[in-house]
Amino acid sequence: MLQDTAYTAPASRRVGGLALMTDEVGRVLLVRPTYNTNEGGTREDRFYQLPGGSAQPGETDWDACRREVWEETGLWIIPGGLLVKDYMPATTTAAEGYNFVYDCGKLTPRQIAEIRLPEAAPGEQPELDAFILIPREDLAHHTEPYQQRRIEAALAARTARMTVNLYAGTPFRRAA
Image 1: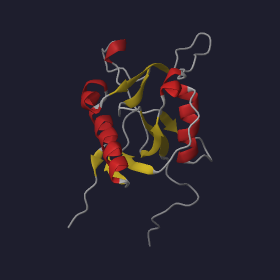
Image 2: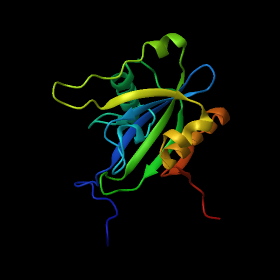
Image 3: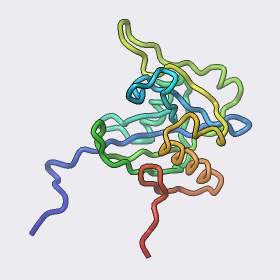
Image 4: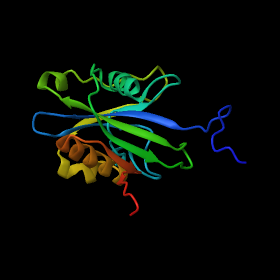
């Protein structure tokens, strides 16, 4: 009989905690990593994404969200309700995993003014080089398609006060 779970050698999966934060008029806070340039692309061609990142060993996705937002923006936030659970299949550069998007509220003008991107260590490239507050209708111009779908799903889930399951940014549909 085959065992479906290898308890002594579990599969490797990424777990990420991401933050949906908006301003008073509903623009979404996004950060721009320096490591996701398209092949042949320039610095200005890089895409933005939600603040947050991977959980460290022994860290929950909720704690990873809080820690990563602090590291990436200098903002101390308390993640609220879970908006999105997005399964991401493995790629040539990343293991399969889940990204959990939390409602981290509406930023005040003071919080926005206090945003500070992390500084790079001497001789190294910074992890992030920009942040923006962007209206929903401009997401397609600044994010990868799966990121756009994830952010739009998170905004809709926030309004509906629910959690949405996604597969690479696409809503999960149950078979009939």
